[in-house]
Length: 104
Image (cartoon, rainbow, N blue to C red; front, side, top):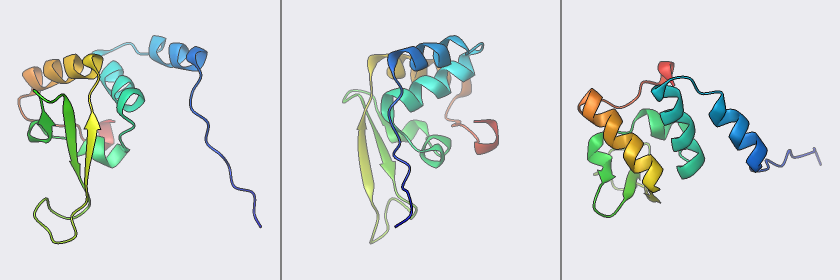
């Protein structure tokens, strides 16, 4: 049986080094969102303002098909206060524009 690499979460020192290396708001937005939510790259890149339930402090992420498809999978992801503030700022500056995969 081939060896399966087990992914370990980042420790506090690794998180500090990663976040301290961020120079721009965009970098901080990407890094903290990944760290605090566990979103996949494609989910983050496809994220729109309509996916955010501000009052409930959560993100609604839909699977590969449309949100109205028969086999649609939906994930509800809690949003930390830090991510909520970063998202508010991002969407205030960029209207309803999410991220683009090439720029993440």
